[in-house]
Length: 332
Image (cartoon, rainbow, N blue to C red):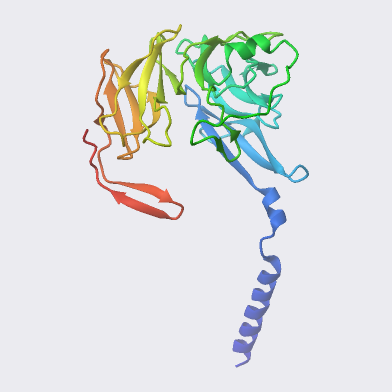
């Protein structure tokens, strides 16, 4: 009886000691959170550049910086930028330079960091900022998206003129959360900029596309002659379903052409990317929302229809904590 009593007392003491070490989570614990975002594997596969996100308790906000780590896990990660708002790292084709975004005057601007040493240098200086970099295959040019207009660039060196705060609303969708009012005349277009270290002054950017629609996700052709992108060319999406399609434009600018036209209005291209492992004819892959599968088309100089490369049952996430089973159908 005595050994059993001693065992019971020891168990109770152990539970009490464990309870003393544990506690309920508190709001201050959120300040200790650290997580990884936007991992990018180097061209040789030996390193990963990523964004480390931390919480600044004093400023009640997030801070981001760029880090490098070996893919074999043999060495600890090392910090390569000071932050506090660095993000969207993109490797140059030779793996020697990282392009990334850092804000200046409230807008993200492209910067270049030579990994052999030295400080990051600002590459763009656009009134509306720039999107993450898309390197050309030869590493000499970077494509990006911005809503900056040539007129705004011409005025950037002049004193700001007073602007009326009167707004004339002519569209059903005229504002959005965290974005404010939409400007119907403002559209995101594709620009390019030389990717060499700019020196004391930012490099001069060149506008590639124009028009009344937004362009997104620029990707270079393998020979660097053309830039591919997706665009929803519906005048006012409030009244009509989206009609995202893949287009291409000469890298120097000019008329765009459609690479892939939706056979159904429910086909929405959400991503477009190239593949370096496929042989000729060059293939481009994109995600089709209707079937949540990967599709691919061969570039043949004419409008192409996609073929599913991953035709299998899928589970599309509709809301947090719930999924919907779907069929493998991807017919057009």
